[in-house]
Image (cartoon, rainbow, N blue to C red):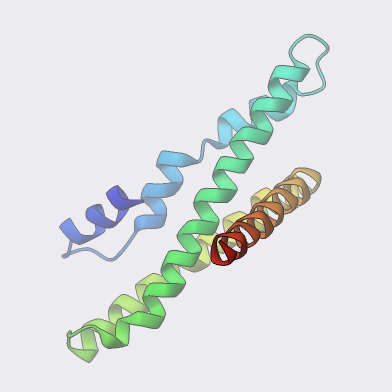
Length: 141
């Protein structure tokens, strides 16, 4: 993620396109399709299914973190000491990148792999609950 942000900052003559960088670096559609194809093959099925879930979990995690980061920046940008014209350009480009990420998350991962997506969402929810409880316990001690 940091490399993606640095890439955008270094290329200030071009629009923000961190989504292109992230999607090409972290998301391998071909590998995911291969794993999906082999998940029901007797010998390779267990390996393929495990790696498919891991790939989708990783992709889901990267995309959801990317989306949260963009949302936070879009809320904070008004506090940056930059001209309003530039602020509007950055905000527009950020929204475009966020839209592409949301579309990928929904149209590819959620629609193509609904059962795995539900499992991932359950894992993330459980992690959030445990993290919150850990914080509550630390507060009590």
